[in-house]
Amino acid sequence: MRKSLFLVVLLLAACGEVEPLQPAAGESLPPAPEQAARAPTTEEMLTPPPIARPVRQEDTLRRSEEREDDPFDLPPTAR
Image 1 (cartoon, rainbow, N blue to C red):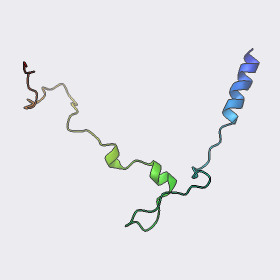
Image 2 (image 1 turned 30 degrees about the vertical axis):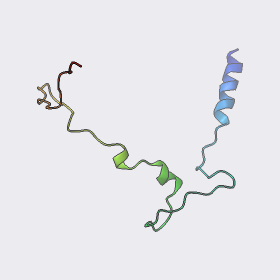
Image 3 (image 1 turned 90 degrees about the vertical axis):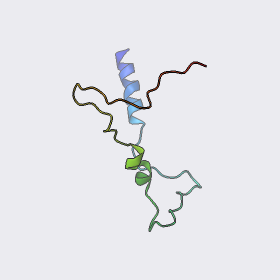
Image 4 (image 1 turned 45 degrees about the vertical axis):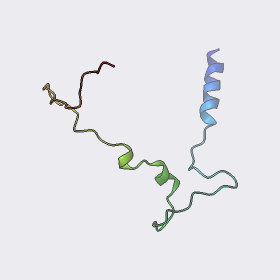
């Protein structure tokens, strides 16, 4: 049982190929942006720009300290 399970896992691991992404057959990469000198590569298109993963530093408390009063933290209103 263990040998067959090992063989199945080995076959599944061996069937995956690692190669650069290519467009589907009959398709092409998107055109280059208007002001760009060249079209971006697939790796460049897959890498998110820094603005897509912002760093939140203003809200991080590094020590045990009181938070500043939040003027927008209002109590719920009764309707």
